[in-house]
Image 1 (cartoon, rainbow, N blue to C red):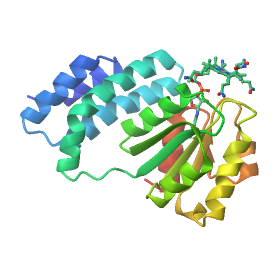
Image 2: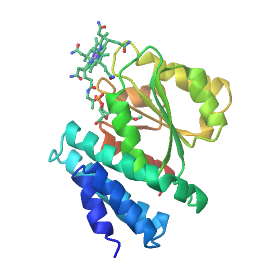
Image 3: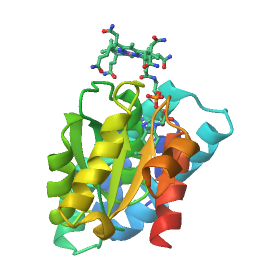
Image 4: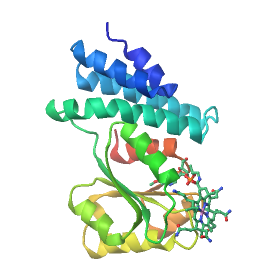
Length: 210
Ligand code: B1M
């Protein structure tokens, strides 16, 4: 019988082949993709997020868990699309213009994907116009990451570009990265700041009221 608890545990323990195998087994037994996603993958990543917040897990454990989740998602994604399972919303995320740091941004993206959101990862050195385009294409949340004090102003420039194109109010903007603070968030008029990947998930849920 499909064991979604074991699947969640495989994600928590970062066992990628096992996570993929259990996902395939559950699908073969007729468990719906939505159930596997919610009670297996998302349940596992929720535990990972909590452990990370409580300093029981560090970056390597989260990366390994996220890799296991990605493996399982490869099996599940086509089924989710075919079954018309709705994502919780589209999020465009990227490291802002001039900045090449992506480890933290990738963690945030993986945690958000693990929480059931559709992620458009724009990569690093992302120009304000690219974020504007993403919002025009339906992103409900824009995630900006910056690791350098010299690239933080690109966050403000991105918000200005969204305003100039008349789409600022079409998406929530969340920001993060080591030098970024709540004060800076307030100063540039972003909608939310998160100090880490797990809180980014909470912040997005809070903003989208889900
Ligand atoms: Co760079 N680097 N780096 N670097 N680098 C820092 C950031 C630095 C603090 C090192 C130092 O001097 N002590 C310093 C910045 C100083 C400053 O501006 N205050 C620095 C510098 C100066 C530079 C260069 C300019 C060095 C040079 O060339 N002279 C250069 C810049 C290149 C560029 O971007 N244009 C540079 C280059 C690099 C590498 C390419 C070598 C490499 C990046 C590799 C990569 O990312 N693929 C690198 C690295 C690895 C670092 C350090 C060592 C580690 C960063 C990291 O990945 N941390 C860093 C020093 C440090 O932080 N100890 C440093 C782990 C990661 C999980 O944490 O990214 O903070 P973090 O993400 C966290 C949170 O911040 C938050 O959640 C994440 C998970 O909890 N978060 C978000 C992040 N984004 C978020 C978005 C959100 C919400 C939360 O919402 C959207």
